[in-house]
Length: 156
Ligand SMILES: Nc1ncnc2c1ncn2[C@@H]1O[C@H](COP(=O)(O)OP(=O)(O)O)[C@@H](O)[C@H]1O
Ligand SMILES: [Mg+2]
Image 1 (cartoon, rainbow, N blue to C red):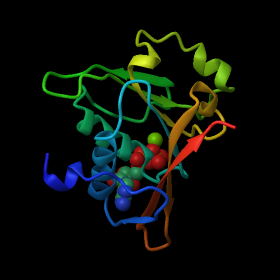
Image 2: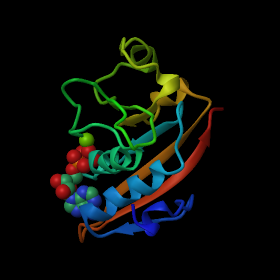
Image 3: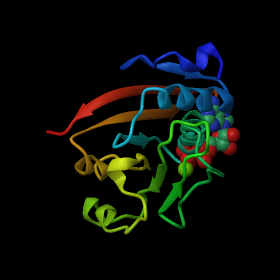
Image 4: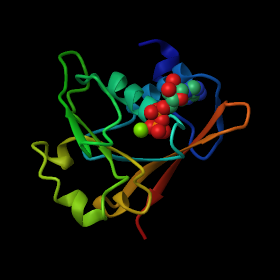
């Protein structure tokens, strides 16, 4: 990992991400501050770069890939690789989930409390899984540059 990749991500500021590599790097930097039980909720329209960011999380955590859009499987579990952070990554696509109850019912092999959980389309759904989470918002400007911001959200 480069020194830059280890820099903590500043909260509540908008970051310009000109290319997919920049979005992946943001995910990698975010991973540096994550531990087992942490929840990351990703919001943004189709094609914004949510899955690309999760690819960066996976690289930063050091888990087995590949990271692809879980749209048709709802959730994928990625086991820790030797030399990584030792924490599995659960990658969920909540697009077709009915709600938090269904998310609880996914019946994954991985204990969510022992994993980092990243949920695409999770706003309004995943929050109830944990008392706090990181919200990553990604928007797409007309010039195609992505603008992302990271927020710490406490459950009401
Ligand atoms: N700055 C950028 N950040 C992320 N993805 C980008 C960027 N510029 C172009 N792309 C492309 O946009 C697509 C984003 O796809 P994906 O991450 O699957 O979106 P989502 O999961 O939000 O629907 C990828 O094909 C990626 O290569
Ligand atoms: Mg996606």
